[in-house]
Image (cartoon, rainbow, N blue to C red; front, side):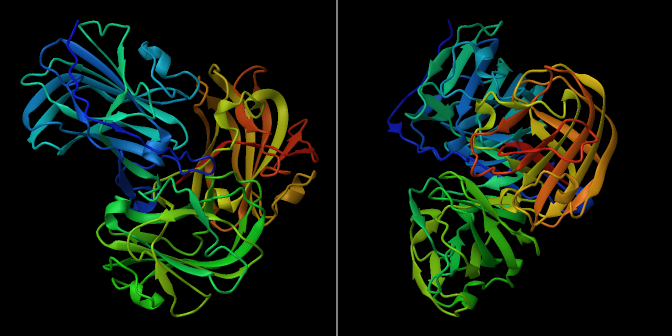
Length: 567
């Protein structure tokens, strides 16, 4: 039996804030994306305090070790394609070389790890992905509390909604054992599962602690440290005149990202009622650590960028508490330099009601509030929760029912002949760009299928509901695919992707209708996650037709999870 050594000093309680809807997704390669535009990246550091050390993985005294770590969605508060992982030293490192290191990542529904490794992944949230394959890892010298980074030769698209399992196996390291910093985490009874010996034996040992890690992601969203607030504010999303303009200050240390910012989402503090606004949104750099009372003076490091200019912005009814609403970024993209502080300005010129934005009390003068168009206002310490999408991120629509439900739409992959339309709102999408693929999330395990014949049409629309006539819902139709399609074998939770032969140019302002018609598929085969319980949010958002040539269909208060990949 190998010796696992830990030193636990205190228990740290972490509040979880899970993204319930319209979370940003993965994508991008960490370098450049379509058209040569640099892909934005951000580094997510687990917001935990060190309470001891562990030598469970990179060890010199045994022939093989395995570790699984459970990271909660609320610990990450973001989404995107994970390109590297970093660990914090628990004591000074003299350097080490560890062979045969394999790292896998997978989504999970687990809140506690099982002593059987296989039970913790591929249990209903999709396939585990090998992101580092049998590699030699060189651990550098470093001081206590330094981080060292392991670049991954594969990528994992973390969806921001599920918990994450990081699975590491390693051979015996060449020199002294590397001590890694850990935190005791009371919100997860068993955050770590460990085993060793030549065969990586089971059952594993489990413990209520977690290695301090950083994840570097390309694209996706980053909720900053301003997350998990319990308060709510109607500034600036209201119908009055006194407080319809707000500037919000975010420090560079809070953002941990760099590159083009292509979207921004707001978590709501109360279940929404359908409202509409006209908004102008600006982003700009600043060297200030406290806002002044003059709006124009706070953008003091270059000119701000107007990413939404008097844009119409509709908040649908029925978004649950802590669900996300994406503001329109229809008129520009702001490139954040990763060094300066960031000012976000939202100015509402018209509104029909109130939407409460999640916030809490922060430090310093980090909010400036005032009337629409007013040059001056009043400052205070209100800290607004927020999520950014950097270039390279997908637009993922996670329905509130999500993968946890057993309901599935038996089309397009699970029917002989049929037709569907789905309506996605701009407030669920948030980013303009060329859509190159779409995908739905599987609700059952299914085998590979080939020879499916489909036509996919996408249209922008200002409508917020669908009617029974298919053609009437497509004011600007573009046929993006017409031909055969094959799908691989998938596990429940995987994305079933449909590549588009013609990319669709989305303006970031309007809603989207996706129409899929065709033949093929096996009854009982692949099925897409369908939410038909959030009927207020998904009122008249899906039409089903009995054949691929149907001109009319049945309107339903439901929607499937959908991913839109941007070039």
